Image (cartoon, rainbow, N blue to C red; front, side, top):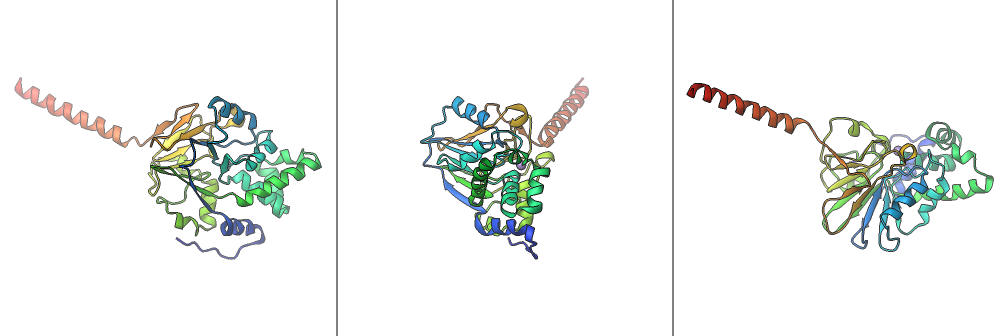
Length: 285
Ligand SMILES: [Mn+2]
């Protein structure tokens, strides 16, 4: 699938560089004891550490994967950015991470956009030295993919920030994604809020964040893990391992959100059955 790029303005150079560099990363997860995928962390480092302690996260043998948006909103942004240095941590790019990267590398209106519209004001409040440290870490987002394919012994899980732009996953498609698809990956909320129960083919599960929800949700084969930690202190993990096919969420169990069609259908059939039996009995009597 190839999309028309058109002429890129100076400001859209970021998307061009994202596209050229690192849209997709494929990872063999059979080497890990456990893999945990975590919802949007948003600068809430203490909440993350508390959760990792609770589950006895094994820093040598486990992997933590973030659905993106590790910064903004919360107060511990540099601590979250330092996760990029850890061998036990991987992530996909969220729209906040992208805005910060665009802000510090392109400056000008991109910087103002991050500061005023997205939530980068914490950066302005840092000392000059801390700002330098933050910039160095934010520049590391250049190596962060938009789509992460996790390959387990028996299944494949695809992680991307807000949504996957197609109903069929093929790693070859990702390499040709244009700006429209990249925008959907970073921002799209229409699937999570609509009666869309699509099971995306080509992988067992898709895992997203971006949209704060009261509890983690599974729609079709799409997990949504953002539980608004900066307001609620609820940070959600999805635990995946090589021995089982079914992942589960911690600490809250996920809610399965599915179409009302099957239950309406069942009620309809029951109604017809009662009617038929009723008419039959009426006739017999
Ligand atoms: Mn987001």
